[in-house]
Every structure is written in structure tokens, then in C-alpha cells.
Length: 170
Image 1 (cartoon, rainbow, N blue to C red):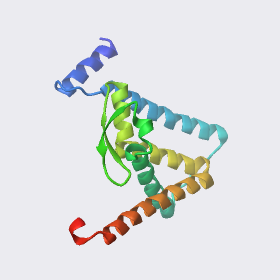
Image 2 (image 1 turned 60 degrees about the horizontal axis):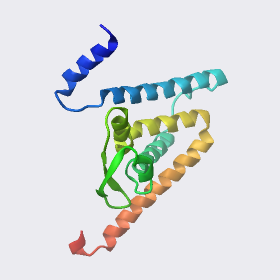
Image 3 (image 1 turned 90 degrees about the horizontal axis):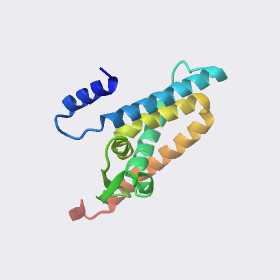
Image 4 (image 1 turned 90 degrees about the vertical axis):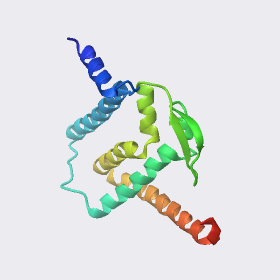
């Protein structure tokens, strides 16, 4: 039995009549795996050595930077132009963010889910930033520090807004 028939059977059994873009998910998983494999090959060929571990400060820096980058990519009003081929505007979500509905099917739908889900894109962003620490640590720390500063600034703006709001606005 050809693999496509097996995939079709498994997909039908899994989906239970719902439209689920399993082929699209497979494409995104293969893309992610290819990028990780490519980075590994490049690292080996160029002699880049993996660190024994990451300092706690780097983990915290990458965590905050990943949070900000994933929110900016998946929810930012200014980055909606990047998501527009995969989504439909659904309304504002407050603080310079928007809500969007994923459109299309197959790979387009899976890509739409990736670019609208901060949890999903966070894996890709954290992986890219971690690879950056291996290949270009100074530049990566600069980018991550900038993203972290913007995240902290955003949180301070939200706290400031809450503190300035009248009691009936809270």
C-alpha cells in the first residue's frame, strides 16, 4: 500500500470528519527538521562547537526575547501584513495587537496557524535564537537584549496605564 494511501487513512481516522491540515503540519515539521539539520551540518563543517550549557542569564534573556518576538510576529498589528496571506482580520485585541482567523487549507492553513500562534512560533523563534547563540553569540545577545527591552517596556506601559486608570475603568 503506498504511503499516501496510509497517510490518507490515518488522516481520515484522526480528523473524525473535521478539516485538519495534517499534510500542512507534516510540511512544517519537515521544514523545522530540515532547518535544524542544516544548522547542525553547517556547525560541523565550520567547526563550531556546542556550548556545554547555557548560563541562566542567557536562558532568561532568550525566554523574554522569544516571548516578545512570538507576540510581535503572531499578534502585532504592524506585522499583520506578514500574516495577511494566511489570515483574515477579526478585530483588535488591545495594546497594538489584533485577532485573526486562519484561512485556507493544507499547508496554507498550517502556516497560518504557525504565524498566529505565539506558542507554536515560540518553538521556532527559541530555536533560532539558541542557534544564534552558538553561531553568532554577540549579535544574538544584542538582538535578544533589544527584544527583551521592548517586552519590559510593553509591560511597563500596561502597568502605567492600569495605574492611571480611574477605578471604574479597571
